[in-house]
Length: 268
Image: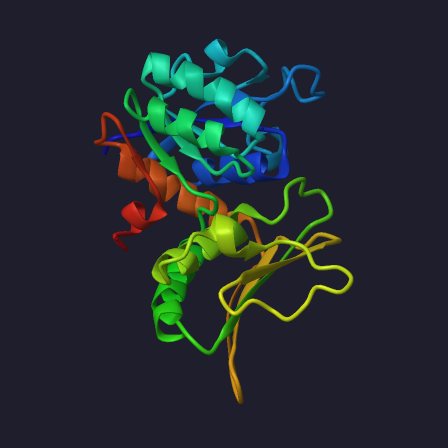
C-alpha cells in the first residue's frame, strides 16, 4: 500500500489539529510536516502532542523545512499565507489541498496559474455533504427559475474573519450559474433602511457570527404559497478533514491541474 506524505499548514489551529488527528488515524497517510506562523507558541513542539501520541514531527515556521519530505500540503489558513505557500509548492511540485476562503480575483488567478505546475484541489468547503448539497442546489435552482425569491443564510463561530462564508458564496455562484445569471451582478450582501421592493432576479445573503457554530448554511427558495429550504449543518470540523484526505488521495496520480470537490466526488 502506498503511503501518502502529507504536511499541514496552521498546525496549531482548530482545523490544523483536526487534520493532524485524521492523518494519524488514516492507514494510507503519514504526517510529513507541520507549519505555523512565526511567533506561535506551538513552534518547536510535537505536532501530535495534543493527541497523546507524539509523532516526531515538530511544528515549524520554515516552509522549506515543513515540506522537505511532503508530497501534499493541506492549507486552511488565510489568503496571504496560502499564496506564499502556493508559490513554494508550485516551484517544488508539492500538491495542494486548499480550503482557505476569502481570496480576491487575483488570488484565485494565482491558484489557477500555479495549477499548471502542480496538482491542486481548491474548494471553499471540503465536506462531502456540503458538495452534495451544492449539486442539489443546482438541480433545485433550475426548477425554481421563476416565481421564487432566493436567500442564503449562513452562520459561523465568532472567530471567522470573512463574510459571507466561502461556502455561502459558492452556493450563490452555483445557483446563479444554473439560472444563467452572474452573482457579481445579482448578489445582495447588505440591506438597511428603505431598500425598495425586492428585485426578483437577486440572490440575497445574510450572515450570522456567534459562539462556536462550526458552520450552518440554508438556501431559501420562497414562492407564493410555499417555500423550500435546503440546509447543511456541520457539528464538527472532522467532516472537512475527512474530505481533505479524500482530496489528497484523488490527487495522488495527478501531476498538475486545478480540481474541486465535484471532481473528487465524481459529481461533474
